[in-house]
Length: 267
Ligand SMILES: *Cc1c(COP(=O)(O)O)cnc(C)c1O
Image (cartoon, rainbow, N blue to C red; front, side, top):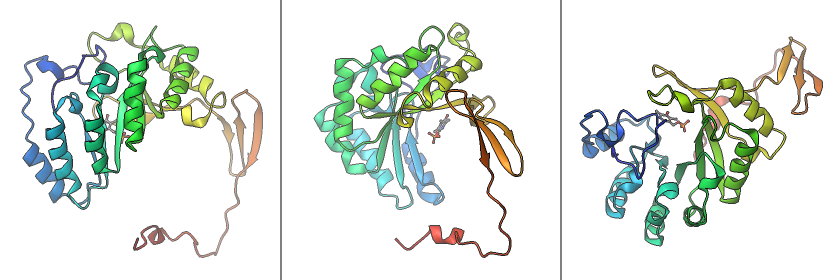
């Protein structure tokens, strides 16, 4: 929606685009974008990202959200923003009253360290949550910033206190100038292992690697399945204890009770 942010992150996956960094000539054509979404009835999910969409005025955001909400097949609206962290003063009662007209509207924020969740930030997040906006957090795994189990656990638990659900931890993208900030995947897996079972599942985000070349996010998880056969699975739990679990038997000659077409009732 814009190529501007309230502050610029060295490791940002869009470093090449934001702030006109390399003469990237950014002219969003909102009418054409909205016309495309309106024509494509298979689109049910629209994410407003950038740059930071919350740098736009309340009026402009209201106009664009209103246009999107008027499209019947658009079900789920989302804004990706770092404004609640970098410019919490931008989160005002007027902004929240405007946003709440467009539910279901989710907001994804971006924090990496518990010390980002200052008094001002917590107040801004509280206002968004009070407006009924489900909040999710995306973190980037950063060497010597948050690649310590104790730091990440403090972050995810503090996020729950702010009514923010930890959503993703990203392996740091291969951005030029960011190699000093990149932590290892082994370290990321160790951190995931230190969360699951050691705190509530609500505090456990999904660790992902965004595959270079447009492959999308790929979940990476610690190995909990030690062995698997047709009849059983050998698992380990968060404490390293090993368990055997029977695989369900194949049941032949029975009509499926879960008819996939039943998922689409008339309501
Ligand atoms: C992560 C990401 C999204 C959003 O993916 P969700 O899993 O729906 O949150 C969209 N576009 C790009 C380029 C992304 O990296």
